[in-house]
Length: 102
Image (cartoon, rainbow, N blue to C red; front, side):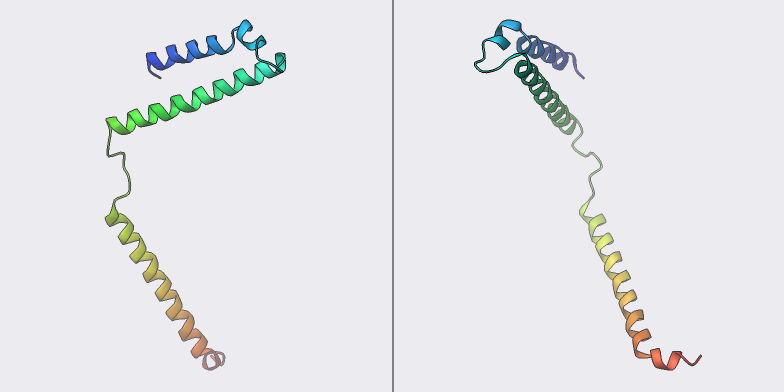
């Protein structure tokens, strides 16, 4: 984590856990303040993670994503395997009666 993200996290956590701010919310007691703080922490962790991911994507645009050629080769291989298996199934079904005497 970068220094600025850690500093931002501390600042947000300090702001959300301030006792005067938590007690002024209408209809929330100590339990509500804790839940509010926990939710803010979760949102902060999520946004920090997304920002780090975007920074990584900007830094390394080619992160090993699957190329179009690879996808075409895999589709062709799977299609060929299904055709071969289907052909074998048809041949076995056609000659099933003749093969039973062997």
